[in-house]
Image (cartoon, one colour):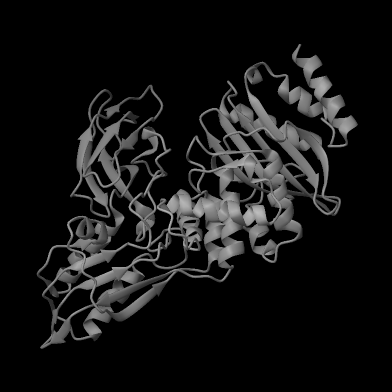
Length: 481
């Protein structure tokens, strides 16, 4: 029954002139673990803008991190490849006799790369620059507080559509008006004998303000399945799962629950270490405004820190599939929304993004977004929409080159380093990957015989392993090309 239906689809697609269903696609669909699965696929000749192969190309499916190509393409188009984020260090009040009678402000612009381990910039450089600027002003005492001003975005750091299991994880970090160190910390454990509870040794950076509820167990028979769970702004984290036994400095990664307040606290501590007294408690816009104590005064700029240009941030986003970068880019796009509508920073970004692509003639009814990273299971997109976007970016956009080069080369780089390795498509495919439980997706470009093709394939609800699905998609691509 499945074969006859697939054959009928093949005939209909061929007769309608919308591209053929290649026999390899039918074999892919006919696997036993594809029973109940959904597939959306399209291959287009980019120069001719013609469909070569397709299957259920208008089907809306969960794209996982493939959604990042939509976010990054829009960021390049609307912000420009050379746009840089600026984080300013400022003060109010007066300086007299080496004493600042006022506050130090760290004014964020949403930069996801501040102190990031993914850039070539020394992650502690900005902190040294800030302290040097305070010293150069002759300030040795601050009769006030270090305050983070993250007000450029709202306080909804994570999407309301994210799953609980993602909150608190290394990849589920929120995006705020002020971010630092990828909004992550490393937790180091010493694990003992099997079936014992590991000991927490330290965290980097120091997260001693967090209360860790340790429910971990060691096991030499079960696969590592450890996770850190917790909500934004909450001072508690829960450690669940299994870790290997007899390891020193075993590492888990979690999210910083309140990055703006953390930055203010971190700088306060560093200033105290440099013998600069700070009399006030670290604070941030969220806490002060909710308490009715946010009273902005005239500020003076001490120094500013700048991100790498957007084209570099887009490359990082697509190469390592960085959720924080993607969501920060979406919220930054949303700053172009000048309406008075009371919506979240996520929603503003989505509204601007969809409006941009509608104006370009793309059918955005095939694009549902809750975030910019693809972490939400509520995100849906079709292979047809992705193909339209990829065609526009590859053939018509003024920023084609930085966008295409932001996608990692299969078999060589990023999250597709082991995809199509040692095959004829190695280096000839630039693909963004996406995966979550029972979800596997790829989209990008393949070059063959001096022609460039756009490729988008989304697979949901398969019942085999991720490794098996990856191998099947590799074989499918090799058959189509």
